[in-house]
Length: 130
Image (cartoon, rainbow, N blue to C red; front, side, top):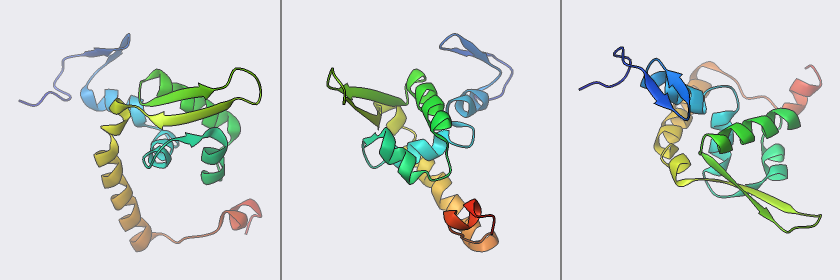
């Protein structure tokens, strides 16, 4: 039996959703959440590594999105050390890892679209207005 978008409401973590598709999109939707999950798919990363790999994200956006992913249980944040310099590492939780097959399908589809309908440019040409 279909359970998505059939009229019953879904409640998770105190939020009410009209359907399972809405719940899923709240967890992984937006411009950056899926990209963050993609970069964590291969293993834990520090904040600075994520920032370097995601060249066009702002520090504030990355910080906010990581906090939301952590709150939703997709990403874990582990702090090493008690005094500066502390080391913070982000990784996928077991729940976050359940998204990997979907993430791989999204990646394959994005690669297909990129090769058929788009062009690759450097981040420098975007930043310089070229």
